Figure 1 (cartoon, helix red, strand yellow):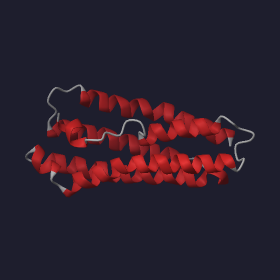
Figure 2 (cartoon, rainbow, N blue to C red):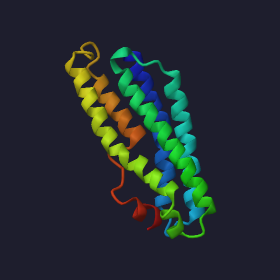
Figure 3 (cartoon, rainbow, N blue to C red):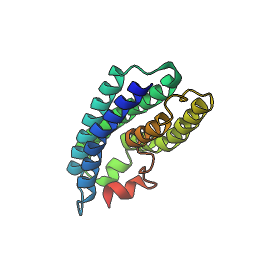
Length: 167
């Protein structure tokens, strides 16, 4: 379990700064364009592909396999939704056209679904801890919560995605 927790922490430390940097650059733009959104999408998809690979290489202990699968599944959904959004942003003529697209709605649904996933992840983590799975590694629940927050963005999922992207 300890090795798993250490490896998850490495994944978080490796990929969280890349994802944050892409968003910070985008949010610093006074009037982002659809091309800027496409660039952000490309960066986000690249990070998600790398996270997926790292999670795939990591064998989860049986006690946390369901949590691991939640992270991996959400990462794949966001990768697919982000790639589709980027492709639509490249083709859209206006922000209104993009925001009305099925690709945007799918991305928004996947992203905001992360809030529910964060709650489910925490509930499962708490239940696993209550069963005594972390008796020898009491720091693991905190590490897993940090990783989930980094991968899913539990604390940073916007309530109004339209205004964040368009400003």
